[in-house]
Length: 447
Ligand code: SF4
Image (cartoon, rainbow, N blue to C red; front, top):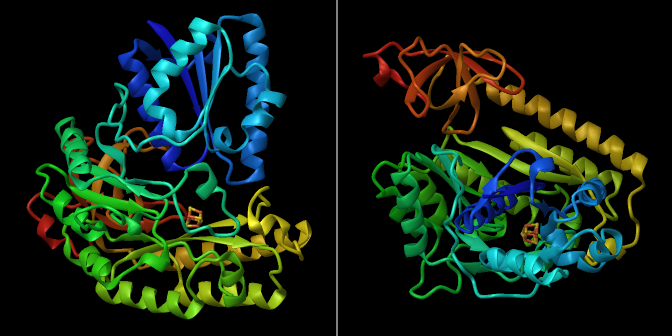
C-alpha cells in the first residue's frame, strides 16, 4: 500500500476533515503513516483564522519542499481554509505543492490524487460542490469519541472572520444521514459524539421538512449505546428558548455550553457584526444557568479589535467578571486580508493588544479556577478515555462538563467505562479524584 501522511492545523472541523480524507484514501489503498519521510503523499490541512496559523503552514510547506527534492515522486497536497483563500499565493510561494483542494472537494480526494499522479501536473479544485455526507474514518480513529459534522459553512459574516469565504454558505445535512452516521459510530464502540458546525445552533435552516438542533438532540438521544452528546460552536444570535429547553431536557446532552462572546462592549459587537448586545448575552447566560444550574459555560474572546478603546476593553473585563466563565479562549485580533475589519481605521497597536491580552487572560484564568473550586468534594460522572499523561498507573477521563479528571482505577475500571469519581483536588487544568466504591454510585450529585 502507498503511504499517506496528514498534517492538520486548526479547529475540530479540520481534524474531522482530515479523518474523512484518511478514511476515503484508505479505500483507495492509501495507508496512514506518522513518518513524513516514508510518505508518498503528504496532505497539509490548513487554517486561515489567524496570520500566525498561515505562517506556520508556509514554513511547513518550505520543509516539505526539501523533502520532495530528495524524493521527487512525493505528492504534496494542501486542503482546508488556506486552500480556498490563498490558492494563488500557495502556487507562487510553494511551487512544490501538487494539489490544492477546498472542503467541498473532499469527497473526490481519491480522484484528485490519481489525477496528479497520472497527469504529473498541478491540480487546483476550490470551487463549490454539492453537499456530501462523508462518513469514512481511518482504522485506529478513536473508538470512544467522535466528531460528526451536522452542517457546513456560515452566513453570519462577522467582520473579522474568513470562514464564510473559506467554508462557503451555510448548509445542513439531513437528520437521517446524521443519525445513520452516529448509529454506525456507536456500532464501532463510540460512546460520545460532538456535533460540529460553525453555527451549530442554526442547524436545520433550509431543510425540508423543518427541523432544528433540538429535534436532532431528541433523535440522537434514542440511539442505543450512545452515552453523551456535545455540540459546538453556537452563536448567541441563534440561541432560542426551544434549544435551551432541549439542552436541559434531553438526557444525553452534556451540561457544557460553548458560547462565544468575543467582546463586551456593544460598540465593538456592532462593528464585529455579531448580531447581539452585551445585555442580550447576559440574558442568555441567565436563561442557560436557570435551566441547567451545573452548566459549564466556556467562551471565545478577542482583544484589540479595530477601534477598541480602553473603555471598550473595560466593558469586556466587566462582562467577563459578571458572567464568570468556566473557561475561555482569549485571542489577539488578527488582521485577515479580505475581511471588512482588515481595512477598518484605528487598528490597535501590538503593545496595547498584548497588554490587554495578558490582562484578560489573567482574569479568565482566575475566574475559571474559582468556578472549578465548586467541584471539590462533589461526585462527577467520568467517561474513562485513557491513562493519565503524568502517571501511567492512573486513568483519565472527562466529566459531562468537559473537565479532565485523573484518578486511580483500582484495577476495576477500563477505558470506555462510565464511572463516578469524587473530586479531591482542583488543579489549574484538571481535577483529581477517587473512584466511588461499588454500590455507592447512586450518591453521584453532579453529573
Ligand atoms: S459566526 Fe463564527 S464562523 Fe460565522 S462568521 Fe462569525 S465567527 Fe465566523
